[in-house]
Length: 317
Image 1 (cartoon, rainbow, N blue to C red):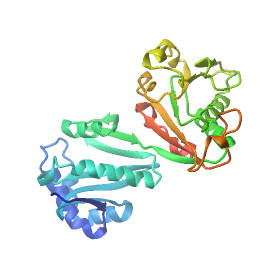
Image 2: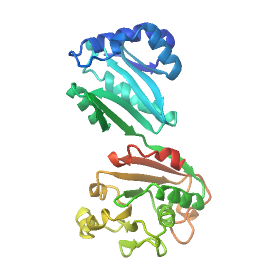
Image 3: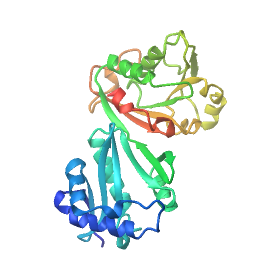
Image 4: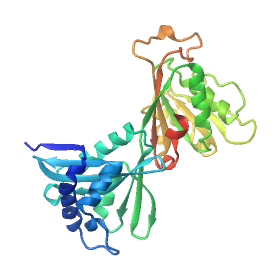
């Protein structure tokens, strides 16, 4: 059985790491202009590990993979992503990228970025399959990025509304926000904050019995379409609401839309709210949607290219 091990790189790993980089990049077809990876030395790799860190993968104790990290404006960058030709197509690259995302999330980075070469379609496909989105091109360089999910504590109902107000500053017409979480965890409270931040008219309350409610803007800006899919029996019923006609002109917030509303847009924010362990419905005030003064959490998952350059974590945490 193969023993694949991925660990944070140490400066003393540099000689073995540069061997992997040279073997991996040396096996690639000639590129124009040529890359600079073969110019790496044990000293340059050691300096990179000491400055920003990296990952070093081994298979059965032998050097197999390398990633060097960098930092740019709150994002973690990946350089010299290399798998030794002897160990390619054995999951080494996928394992390293998964570990890199864990490191970035623990470090509080917005996400990860990297540069690939247009002449290497298999490499481009590798990053696309792992959820990395193309953000631009310059000559033969293809830029990729991936926003990472993040969590934050929301201790009180007012904190939940403030989260909504901060989020509203980033929202524009056409944005879709899906809110997940059990009854009474604060979905409508969050939507109230979004409505306040957008400056829409009308009291934002749970639209359970009308399924959807439109709040027009009071001072310009987009309207808020507030949808409660709790009693929607399936995708067909949701489509009957004809939300597509309002998506481009409004900010749409859908409660209880998990498994139903994802098809409305490839670009969306999915926010899952959870109550503290030991919390119960008896803690929820009578209005059914406010939250008690306890450490509720919000997990924010950005989906699609709309959010790739938006510093969500910086603005919301």
